[in-house]
Length: 505
Image (cartoon, rainbow, N blue to C red; front, side, top):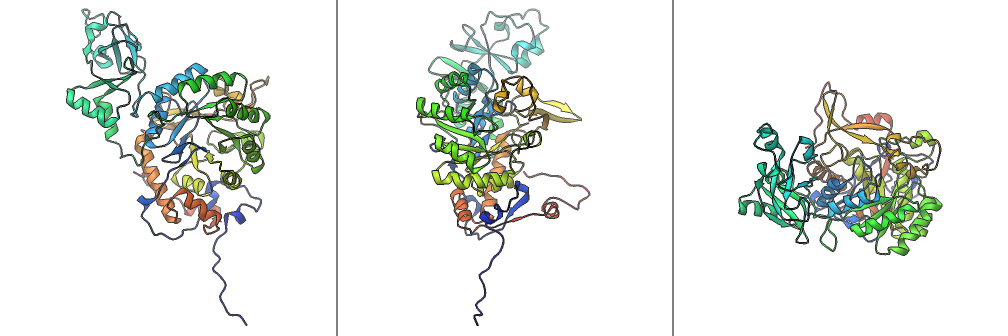
C-alpha cells in the first residue's frame, strides 16, 4: 500500500478558476501569497504598452475628455507612464494638445496668454485660466519675451487710472531656457539668475510656456519619482491619442502624426467590427512606424480577429468603468478579471500586450489586472478629479470636486463621442454612460508614486519581481487564486469600526 502523501493542492489555477462559466470582477478573486526572496524595491514594473513602445511603469490615462489632455499627458509621461489624449474635439485641437504636451520636459503646463506692450487689459477674463499674461514684442508666441503681467498684480492695481496698458503692469523677466530643460536645470537657472519666472523656448524662437519658482517648489515637494520619464528617441515626452474608425479619422490621424504622436488607440466600445479591422490595416499600411492599439474586446474570439488584422496592442474591457452603463443598457460585456485573463491568454502567444481598461479603484486592482496577464492598466476615475485632469473645480455638499463623465453619456455624445458606440448615424441616441463628479485628489505627481509602491508590495507578496515573472508564475500554475464570498470581501476591507480615517499616504 502506497502511503506517500499527496502533493499539496491549495487554491485554484487561473485556468481552472476562469473556466467555470462565471464572470468575475477584480473584487471577486484573491491571489494566494507565494514565496518572498527579494525586497519590494527590487520589483521592476517596466513593461510594454504595445509591441514597440516601452514604459517604465504600467499606467495609462484613459482617452476621456474629463481625464486626458495636455497637462495629464505631461504628468503621466514624467511618471514613466503615458496618457492617451481624447478625440472628443476637432482634429486640429487634438493635435495641438499633443504638441503642447510634447513641447516641454517638466510636468508643468499652463495655457499662456500673449499680448504686446501696447495692448489693454480690460478685465480679469483677459487672463483666461492663466496666472500670467506673457508680454512679447508682437503679442504672439513667436517673438521675443519682454516679461509678464501677474493676474494678482493687475487685480490689486486695476483701479489705478494711470495704469491702462500692458506696459504699465509689466514685470520685466526676459529669462528663457530651452524647452528640453528638466526640473533640476530650470531650478538651477532660477537660482542663478535670481528670477521667479522663466520662459520655455523651442526652436530658438517659439515661446511655448513659462515656469515659475512656485511651480518648481510645488513639484519638488512631491515624492521622488520612482521611474524615469517616458521619453521618445527625439527627447520629447511620449504621448498617445485616440481616433475613431470613420473616413474623416484618416485626416485626424494625419494631423496627429505631424504633431508627433507616439501611439494611436482606436477608440470603440466594441472593437470587433469591420470598421476597426479596416482602420487597423490602413494605419499599418500608411504609417507602419506608428503602433496601433485596437479594442475594446473582452473575448478570445474578438481578440484573435484584431490580432490577425495587425494590432500592436489590445484594450480590454466592456462596461466595467464606474461611469459606464453598457452592461445594463446593452446586456453585453464581461467581468473585468475574467476578460483580462481570457484575452491575455491568447494575446501573449502573438506577442501582443494587453491593456486592462476599466474597473481600477485601488492599487490591489492594479496588482490583480497585471498578474492576470495585462501589461498595463488604463485608468479613468482613478485619475479624474486630479489637478491635471481637465475642468474646473466646483463645490458640492462642501466637497471640492471635478466633473467626470462617461464617453457614452449623452452630454459627451453631443460633442462627437457617439461614434465610439457606432451610434453617430443613428436617429435616436442611447446613453451608455453617466455624468458625475469625483472629489479633488490633488496632483497625480503626488498620489501615483504611492500607488506604484503599493503595487510593488503586492508583487512581492505573490513572489513576482517583475510583470513577466508574475505572468510566468500564473501560466506555470504556481500562482493560485480563489473566489471570495461576499462575507470574505467585507472581511477583507475596513470593517467593525465606529469611525476611521482612510489615509494611505
